[in-house]
Length: 107
Image (cartoon, rainbow, N blue to C red; front, side):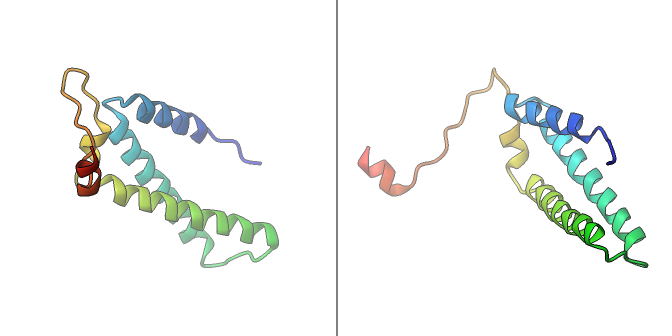
C-alpha cells in the first residue's frame, strides 16, 4: 500500500468548490493538470515493459479511468463560462439559470 496525501488536496478542493472560494477554479485546474501529468508519466514508465499480472493490470485499469476523469475535468474547466460559474462574489448580483420557453409560458 502506498500512502500519499492526495486526499488532502481533494478534500480542500471539494471544500473550495462547495463554498465557491475564489481559488476553486485555479485549484481544480491545478489538480486536474498535475494528476494528468502524473498518470502520463506513470504510463511512460510502465508501457515499455508492462507487467501483466492481475494486480498490475488492475492498477493500469484504474490509471486509465483516473486519466480519463482528470483529462475530462481539465477540458470542462476550460469550457467558456465555467470559470465565472465557479466564482462567487457575495456583493455581485446572482444570475438565475435561464428557463426554457415552455417553463416561462407556464409561469
